[in-house]
Length: 70
Image 1 (cartoon, rainbow, N blue to C red):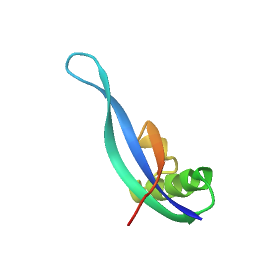
Image 2: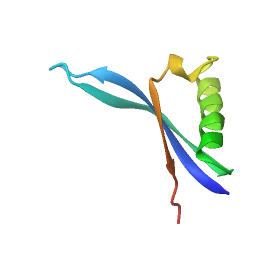
Image 3: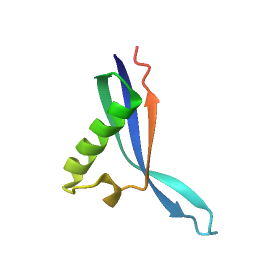
Image 4: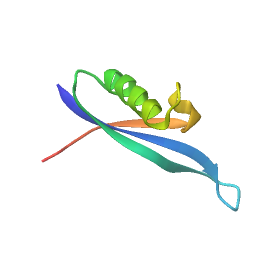
């Protein structure tokens, strides 16, 4: 079992027209078997936190990283 951190980002344009990612929220997902399971769990939690059915209403992308807590 592993712990993952899932970050949700909105892609915006800077004043000079270059895209950049703006963090909308981060969710820790403890003790799951895979990054796929972490993504599923985090997307449901993120959507619930924002009162929507689909996390994509408040973010464009997600990034999943294995957490290294000490």
